[in-house]
Amino acid sequence: MLEIDYKKLGNRIKEARLTANITQETLAELVDLSITHISNIENGHAKVSLPALFDIAVVLSTSIDALLCDSLLHHAEQHYLKEASDCLADCSTKELRVLVDILKIAKSSMRNHLKY
Image 1 (cartoon, one colour):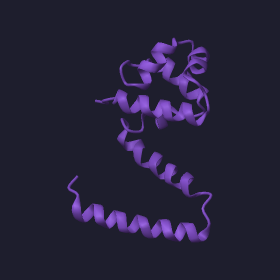
Image 2: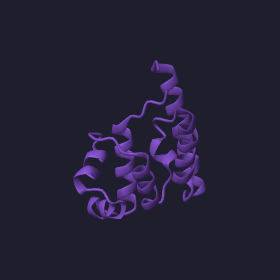
Image 3: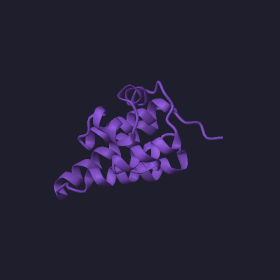
């Protein structure tokens, strides 16, 4: 059974809204919800209906999968890989080399010292 983490969902909606440079008020108007409800959704204090989630994703130029990636474990890996790829897309060759080295060190340290 799918367990939705509404706090993480709200955080992703907020991140997408801020990235899109849209205020809560504008988002509320565009998806026909109250500003209070948008705030409660972003803070994880309210659930969001599927139609409202769809409208929010459309307005924010994202996908429902991207917003729910923390809840949809089988989609999370693809989302994180795309997010990493997007982050690296504008890096120079030298920056990529340094970041790959940092990633290798961080990965090794995490696997050696953390139990997850």
